[in-house]
Length: 485
Image (cartoon, rainbow, N blue to C red; front, side, top):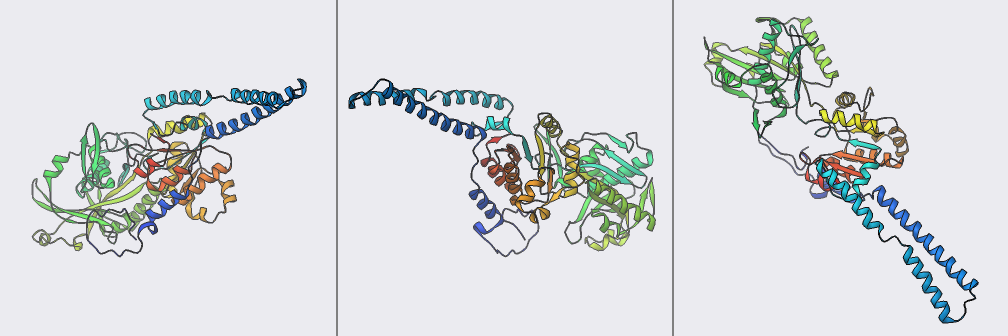
């Protein structure tokens, strides 16, 4: 199913339109926004309550005063009674605090100025006070708590595990072994071979603009290029040394991508570099690169690689396998690129990557906890990934996250009890996010919701204060919030 708003980046095909307008997924979210009433802030509630209370008190005082004057002074006659009534009305009008709105506006304006100095734009004046009243902050994960920039954390080769430091697309970060020490020569050789394959079987471009490193292309491929730069592999040298001759593009059926290269230095060879799903790639490998050469891939070693893949997945790392092969003479002379070339490969290693949490998000969660504010993570991502990121940020220590499928089975009353003890929710839809916000509000919490996507918009509108990401956020999320950061 292709949802409205999907962008096709390559390939061709025929699509059958099954829904239009408000019947599409985008239209469904628009309908939720329309049905969700805009929430009044705690300050507005308090001012409304204060105004009604003052009104009742003033009327009561005026009535008592008029009655007292009439009884005590023995007022009689139509003219005298009218004078007393006018006095009562004047007393009531004088008691109305007409300066209160001006005072409140002035105080809130000072708060808006302070927020502006912190690069936060306040859309509604009363939101400043609400932000200070919030005792729960619910946040989306991708792009809000995390950078939305894939980063390689680990590379597993035949001789060991390599940790790669640094976040985002800046090619800066130390290379170390599992204990944090220097890696050995064998591991170094294997690491360079694995990242060479990952860098060349790649269509992304790493570039620096206005002092900021960005990726043009797929974020996963961009993360591989950045890891290669951190390992000291030079882009210009790789491009000149391994000249691309052809490509077998990735597809969801094959779960692999391969590129054909001619090696320019020394005795010219033709190589195939392949990356893809570890289980699929491993089935096409007959050898493994170890130290400075290749050796046969035994059944025991295959089992170890599969276990290593599972270990990386438990750390919420997305895994890719990389492999290569020197093509036979018959293949070199043939310009055709075919899947048959993806056979008898030499396995080079596993790459584990993740969308890392923002350092400032970790600090913000810590400061919120000290202020007595409870942090929630509500994301559409995988439950394991959500739980790991939540632990890294200090949001919660739950072993697992509650999924949208579990929320579907909960009645509203049960959900209201669940939100009291669970802070991580994964694989949720826009409706689920809205239900969670409503359940928190029903428990008496003042809820702040942060997000940047279309699917966050209904929850942003329903929350006591909606906070949208100003740079990475979508227009619909910015419109349905009261504060932009």
